[in-house]
Length: 264
Image 1 (tube, rainbow, N blue to C red):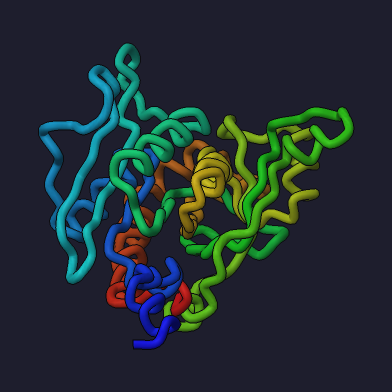
Image 2: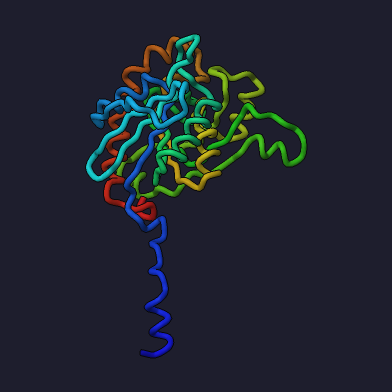
């Protein structure tokens, strides 16, 4: 045996590049129960009675097998005192971080309802595959910190998924308020956003920090720049929009099944 041959035998086999390994474990990060339950039913998931997360947190995990995928849905649950959904960037960031640490997903999918901008072509019921994310509520005029506050990020490349599902593409801007002030509105426009939500950029921040690829699907419940009251429009449209969003999420799972990241 030649020396080179001996060395080759002793070497550890190279691990497949992460982007070339089949996606097996998917975690959906979802903010509201009304958004989570249609997807739980779509995938026929069960709630985990023995939470792997810290004692006392209200987070809920639904899980199961769909085709060749391990599916987990993480919902931040309800406020212990007020009983309302734990929405916003802080619960989203915490749940995303904990889910990555405990569940070790190959891919995160953040789905949810959002406000849409008519001036950018958004209509009620539209479902967008997000190309870019940013914040519009973290205002800091100091040099460098202004860009940090915006936190602009591109999402992973999913051109094949886009072709298969024929979704609209848009940029997402995230803030911790349901409405937008004139200052926020100016920053949303500066972010070139088509849709706005209260979680997406926080999920993206954590996923990027821990090097986990993430996809964002946002469905428009209310148009923020028309004359209709946003709260009433949101409440009226949530049932139909979340049902359609669950169907789209299932189509995404069907496409992902058996594929690796580089094929998305």
